[in-house]
Length: 202
Image (cartoon, rainbow, N blue to C red; front, side, top):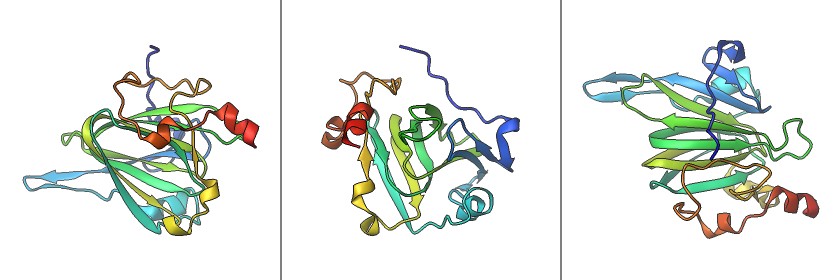
């Protein structure tokens, strides 16, 4: 197995305070401060105003969703025609974002993120994921609480825009921390197609 190289924010990638570019257009990494005391903690985890001011002036959260995953659950690779702002509230997760937009200059590129919600870490992490980017999450240590706000209502979206790409697509060659046999995967994700199959459909 190849060594997994996780994204780390660098000062030269910062576009605004605690907002960073990534190698994929439309994908941004954000940090937010966690304030802790003897009672617990407080954090502003989803701040759409930061996105509208610095990245996408039309971004406004219309719906907030939460998924909870046990250890070794993998979800993805899913893409929709909406923009989303995500964070991990508990647990330890590997996130992999894949550019599956065929006309993109970074088509088939992937970026890995290691989100660990250690309560001793003063910083939390978030991602702004642009429309049609493929995203996946693997629970390294559950339960993983994955919170995301989207700029469309689920029932009003165009389902024809929904896409699921195989977690084991050879062109993406994603390095998972568990074997396929160990991973807990939905029937939908097990049946998802490869990028080559998608290209033939289009």
